[in-house]
Image 1 (cartoon, rainbow, N blue to C red):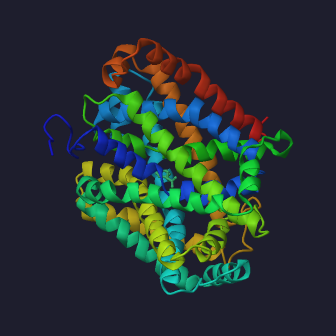
Image 2 (cartoon, rainbow, N blue to C red; image 1 turned 90 degrees about the vertical axis):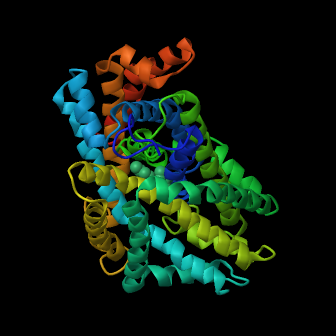
Image 3 (tube, helix red, strand yellow; image 1 turned 180 degrees about the vertical axis):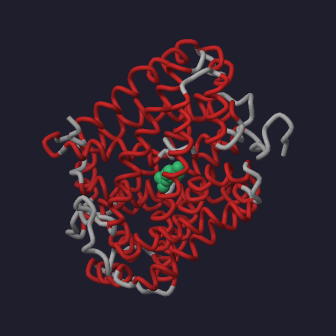
Length: 452
Ligand code: PFF
């Protein structure tokens, strides 16, 4: 590790390690658990199309901007934003990007680790043959049983939080690089295997048409906001996670190709997960809009239908848990990097961030059982926190990043840091940041949330 010209946190070994780490951050529960269930709740094809458009028009340009800022600032997002705002003479207001991001990360981690806890429970269930020959009823009962048990959920939430904390204490490079190098490709292989299975099921055609035939009449204003929010959530944008990882990126690596690779991999995983899950849904007469339990109520049925299903299912849930783990690490990193820069040890910083987010996570735990009747603006505690972060804080952070880089950072600074080789692509990127991303995000926000 080389830390002289790279800031106090060190640098990734190569461009590929950055791709690996950023993909590790991007690919997680958002792709395999959240994308299918929100697509089911929001009517399918038209929602998927809006989501893809948001990835292209806002996600990729903002991701490039975040990595660029991180690589220039070489510190935690809070201090990176402070330093660049100063050096570019930009309004102090933009410093809020760093603060809001750390807060959003803390909120997201609180519920993310609860859901990741479910995957831990499913590893055990698969390995012990609970789903042997399972049908939709068994899958539904098992999931209902888990959700109704706050003690078990708390234990799982605690185990996952500790697993995340252990890596964070050691520092993301040491903790992440080696494990991801093998495990990410394995996750891709498992998904392709499941895709092969989905192809043989009677619901495959219906799944494709659900996901890809576009019917705009099924799309509400709120659905569009959810699609937008998810494009930020799935790419880990708008809160500094990718900025923190960008700060560990080697200077010479080209930004465009790197970011595009991460965006494509992330989108592919989500689409494949969606195809597999909806094939099972339609083959078994399940409800596409079943909500957060969708993945947990469908995949066990798929595994029951496969030779060596228990083994494959166990490995699959292990990989999902690892994907969630590598994402969760990046969610906490901005706040921890900042605390370390303040002079705290990584141990103290990690204990504080993970401890508070664990505590807040208890709210999500009970929102699925004893406190499911408690609502804020008509949503459970979990749904409110998810809505606030994904659909408000992350897109807002994204707009601010786009406007900041597009309008307030000098073009020479950007060109120097970004190393986008083609002038046409460079100008297109700046155009997107200046106009397309902020206007698109702003429009969806205002329309979808009914602000005016
Ligand atoms: N991108 C992750 C996923 O799709 O599961 C979640 C996530 C990670 C969101 C990091 C935000 C973040 F900063």
